[in-house]
Image 1 (cartoon, rainbow, N blue to C red):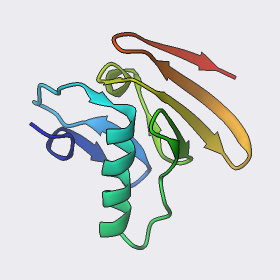
Image 2 (spheres, rainbow, N blue to C red; image 1 turned 90 degrees about the horizontal axis):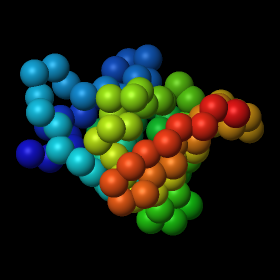
Image 3 (cartoon, rainbow, N blue to C red; image 1 turned 180 degrees about the vertical axis):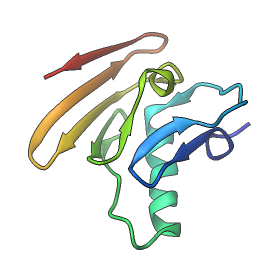
Length: 102
């Protein structure tokens, strides 16, 4: 499958795995690219993320991920920001993840 068939963005910004889907694993940069495609298709919405490089993206509030989505990402870092304040940092290596709440 592909990320667009497995993940969904709700109106409130929650990024979640679709029900009844056995989701695969995706690099952090793949999440960013999918979110940019989502933003392009939904012009009334602000850009959900910014790519710093292939291993670091910023996810802007109200967009957010939960532990289930985190379990399906790897190979990078996601910094969740609300304005200029960092809310969470999801840090991944090739097979594990960690969450740090600031």
